Amino acid sequence: MAERVILAYSGGLDTSVGIGWLRDATGKDVVALAVDVGQGGEDMEDIRQRALDCGAVDAIVIDAKDEFADDFLMPALKANALYQKRYPLVSALSRPVIAKHLAITATKLGADSVAHGCTGKGNDQVRFEAAVAALAPDLTSIAPVRDLALTRDKAILYAEEHDLPIRQSAKNPYSIDKNVWGRAVETGFLEDPWNAPIEDLYEYTMDPSVAKDADEITIHFESGIPTAIDGVAMSALKIIEVMNELAGKHGVGRIDVVEDRLIGIKSREVYEAPAAMALIAAHEALESLTMERDLNRYKRGVESEWANLVYDGLWYSGLKRSLDVFIDDTQRYVSGDIRLKLLGGRATVTGQKSEQSLYDFSLATYDTGDTFDQSLSKGFIEIWSLPSKISARRDLRG
Ligand code: ARG
Image 1 (cartoon, rainbow, N blue to C red):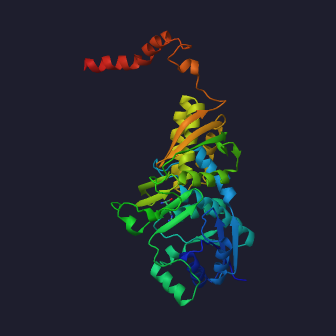
Image 2: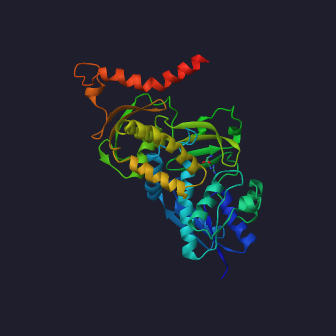
Image 3: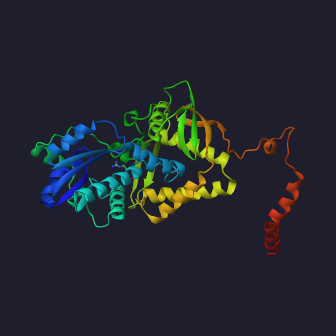
């Protein structure tokens, strides 16, 4: 029996053509694996059939939507994860779950290698291969588009010559990656960062100026995880789906950045991530209400480290694992309700309450009922400023 390779299959042009390329170049039988992370669009059964029609010996579909939401997106939410303060890691989060299923399937079917359709210019190749290396170190990763230098023109030609059933229009000028956490759009006229995005790019969000009336919703969190919207309990996946609708209607979560890729290239990216951005705003507010000052400040640093690791493909690394333990521990008291107003491209926190709140009215108020002994501040400031005072005297001496 021929050796097997498990290909992460999307149903698009590159991975469809990749089936034949892989077989021709390696002599291996190709098993296509389509992992559903909420990318929507086509029916997964159609995608499975297309893989078989393109020459895969077997095609497997895995519904990983709940797993993706529970085990990948919820940790990202607990980490308020934004790369370079802007990008909620949409693609970076899906690669480790897809890689996990590649590794599991390869091991189960006795394959010696896995493959993906990434080019040699992006982050996703790194994420797939670094994740597979960490999960199944003996598997080899193959990237036909990169390793065989297969261009888009060659792919189209190959598909035509072999009469492959590719539905995707060869003319689509954008490279799009999407899942339930958001959409990433690259290339085409966006490659000039001076060109403003056009409405056509967006699918999860409406033009923020269209909806005139605000929506107000209340999200309930338990230990950092959203568990209900307006009192209706839902799974993490369902909450994200509902939030994509509600926040998307108001154009929340449109992001336009020039981003630093791991491999050193700067790229212009347009994202839309309505649920991610609204949930992060709500979660961060609840943390401010329930977390001690030092912990909150320290965690903000950990969050950016966490986002860098995940962006850089190190989901399954020791450092990331240890930071997760820290972040989980910080979420102990992050329970309560956040009211969000959605309007004009913004998700604004308008109310916050928690049984674990550290906000103390009698300490905070400037009205009667103030229990804070203001006279204590005088001595505190004397001691607090002492190092500054001593060093200032030295500096003045010259
Ligand atoms: N630049 C983003 C990232 O590295 C998005 C990548 C999108 N991938 C794609 N194949 N279009 O996470």
